[in-house]
Length: 109
Image (cartoon, rainbow, N blue to C red; front, top):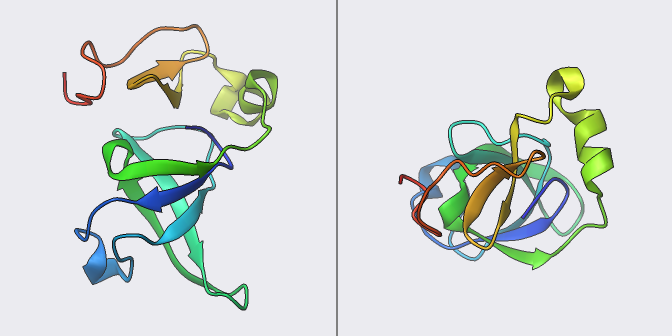
């Protein structure tokens, strides 16, 4: 899971912000902040109805973007490879390959 991926929300806990379980959106920032991605949700007519931060564990990739690590690095603040930016095999990773969580899929470990 990374920048510009299409993702689905797996829970109803964002309902108060207008995002229901099963809603599909796009990750719009290259970095992960507080274990959350910024995701935008649009109506069928293309109008955005929500732009919120969603916990990585509450998202599932529907369609992977073709964004490369180089593209992500170019978009990261200060082009810093130490920023958390993607989720692979249950780990929050930076571009150095360092893991933020110690146990896969347990994003609080």
